[in-house]
Image 1 (cartoon, rainbow, N blue to C red):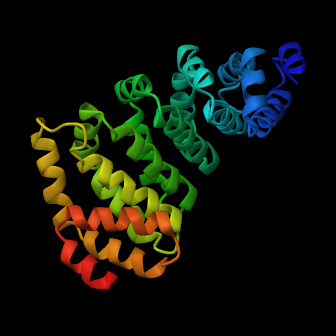
Image 2 (image 1 turned 180 degrees about the horizontal axis):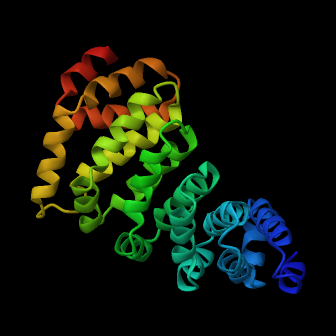
Length: 265
């Protein structure tokens, strides 16, 4: 597949199929590592650059970059170093109407920052927060876009003061709350929404730092109906252990500890 992509760079159809195949194969961590070593990351980014007009190439390119970075730290670094962040953001900007591109882009950005602090800084500085929020607002009916948008925001905010402040300032709390309210039947939206809200308002690792943005975040969380959404999620998904865990954490942060204790008896 790598050889075919190298030989037929002008063919959008072949590049689309190549990106799809590489992303599919990269589900295996050992194969993802091998693809990275054989130049697969560069080929995906090159395909996205050469066929910017193709929503299909951009969708499967974003998906491939995210999958290649998932579970492989070297690939995660390589995607950023070789222009993958810019490629994903360009795809999202050019194809705002494509659910596939927006979903793949949000997921890729979230994966790139999940365990990489440097990528959090880079993506925040390059407009990634704005891109994710725009995707979530434009694709309001898409569970996938909003799920992965919440996922990306939560990881962008984790341990990064500047990104937290930017998410609050750009209306990110409200965007997450709207997603949770609109998709109450989606356990994934509820889980990643709760985790995003926790990340934005958390003080973990910052015992001395309490910014005005974080104070504002907590005040807006308390007044934004989030407690009602969290309680609704707890009732709707009693067997979902991760959702139960993070919904309760969110309620504790909002001062509902006694209510949680009463329900646990």
